Image (cartoon, rainbow over all chains, first blue to last red):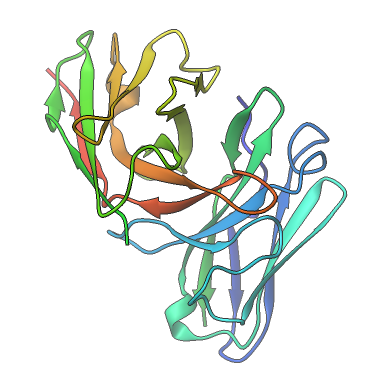
Length: 110
Length: 121
């Protein structure tokens, strides 16, 4: 089962905005509005930060936003902060009633 | 809020069966779907399987022949069995709740802390 494609790393200075892409196919990202994003800090459990493409769970900073165009979903972090340094994963529902994750992106705050 | 706690052996021998249990507390096991997700050292997340208390299940096609997920509503537990393990199955295994929104069930909203399982002789 092939993973969704994310850039291996993205970096930015404090206060800047960065965008992480998540590319799939019409059988997953492009076919359903079930894209979610997770923040994963070392030694911790992943944390849901975006669901259903662009919705934020209660308590998640509004600096995180999600969108989708065709087979590519995107996560934007605005006003980048040191605490945002983590690994980020996208996930999508896939035809066949399964789930698939992205390859993961390491975000570095310069 | 719901809490998930994984338990099971931290070391499994090659060719044997990996067995893990997830105990769900502060929430009803009959209210959602439940899933297992793993992360090998230095690698990304991989979805393994999901189950509903009604018995509905589905598996990652790449693992389907070796995986069984089950639920015990009387104990509020979800279990995972992975047969014929190799070193490639060494990973942190997470028990996860599948969230529900108006649109459907396309995300993972509560995660256990994870348990490291090492496959080695």
